[in-house]
Amino acid sequence: MTAAPQWLTAWEPAEGADRAAAAFRARFGAEPDGVWSAPGRVNLIGEHTDYNGGLCLPINLPHRTYVALRRTSTQSPAVVNLASAQEAATGLWTAALDDVTPGHVTGWPAYAAGVAWALARDGHAVGGFDAVVDSCVPYGAGLSSSAALECAFAVALDEAFELGLGADDAGRIELAAACIRAENEVAGAPTGGMDQSSSLRAQAGHALLLDCLDGSVRHVPFDLGSEGLALLVVDTRAEHQLADGQYAARRTACEDAATQLGVATLRELDGASLEVILARLVDAGVPAEVARRRVRHVVTEIARVTELVALLDAGRARDIGPVLDASHASLRDDYEVSCDELDLVVEVARSAGALGARMTGGGFGGSAIALVDAGRVDTVASAVAQAFADRGLTAPAFLVAQAAGAAARTR
Ligand code: GLA
Image (tube, rainbow, N blue to C red; front, side, top):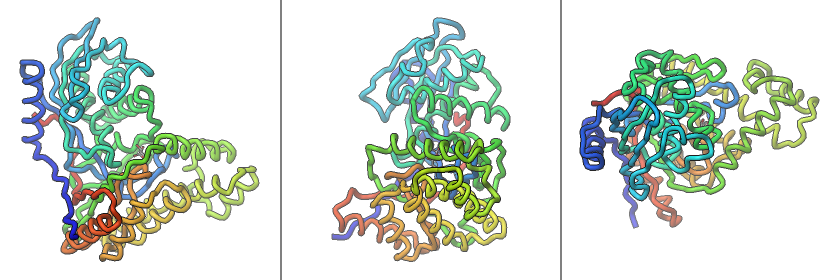
């Protein structure tokens, strides 16, 4: 049986805005103040480095989450009313803003209302609001649907309550920090911040070189099409129940190793030779061989970000394949966050002619990327789809990523 690849198309902004506005009208019987949207992201390289003060290099996807929102009050008691086209079962979710606190909100509203909580805690005058969400960011695909949700609310609340943060990068850093706190503290996911920084700060046509030590960025031109190349993204649709605990365990292992080495973050080991670092780990009594492999991944991955950016700067995108391959091997063998489906995508994509491939995002399922000649996109996608079908796996889904713009008002 031949398996045809399924493609995940992004909505045009006008379509996304129409959908969210129509759903808002149907739900609340009124016009929203506006529609705002924020993109999902795909990380080119620099995986599990953000919470280690390292470097990463995401691009934003054209796939966005749209929020139609109306401000309803500026003072207490402020009420939040939320609905989502993706989560119809929730119906209308209602809460007093004062009750939106860590430990008291579950499910998707934690990512949305949590941003209002974080902004209010920063001293911003956020009151009550009604909002409806619609999205074409693939859910659970490791393409940051949660950050897209948070960041769409961040720019919506920013404008609706006239906070003035979305207008420049300094303000967007504050918005990103609020989104990260919503995710870490209200939703309870101990993620590292790359996703929110990308969604709020990356530019169209550019990858975002993010230095997670100080939050500084450089916008690296990223236009594979001009070099006859394409970035194929494959959502394996593999679900891994242990993902949350495993992510937290990796983060804790890194923080423990840093403590034992006497550094604030593993980034501070940057520049030292790998042998010297590993010897220091032994001297510091870092117990397991496993901890040493975790650290080795982080240190070598940060170096790979620099290597890949240097190739892009030199106009040599065609040569980044081996760096992607090395990243995947490190994530699979040293960091142990890959899975059979991700390894299969990487292996089959390469056999079908990809110049390099790796898992992307947190891992344990989710998506992989492959660098391919533009003329071979269909060949590689078909080979991957066929390999999944042959093994009786759930059909994967595909998209070709082009670096899109940041969270903004759409209407
Ligand atoms: C998830 C997290 C990010 C980052 C990646 C791994 O996407 O949300 O903060 O840690 O995993 O690079």
